[in-house]
Image (cartoon, rainbow, N blue to C red; front, side, top):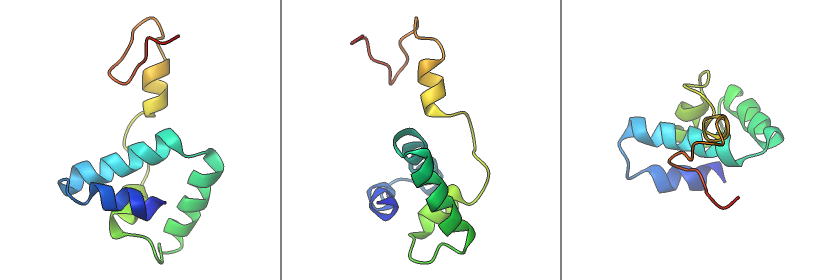
Length: 84
């Protein structure tokens, strides 16, 4: 799945692609899935798209997008929903 996400982002500038991949994985993957992927990256990333390895090779670059959107529910953010 990580390679499919990278394939989508290949048309983006490299910095945006890396950020997009990391953001997507942080937002939509379970903790167990993220940890498993990190183990694979730490072991050299065999079979992973280089953009995935680059996106996940270091410490997180910023705040969690989930935290950003749920920290202040009274303010609907860019990705927020007014459905509830």
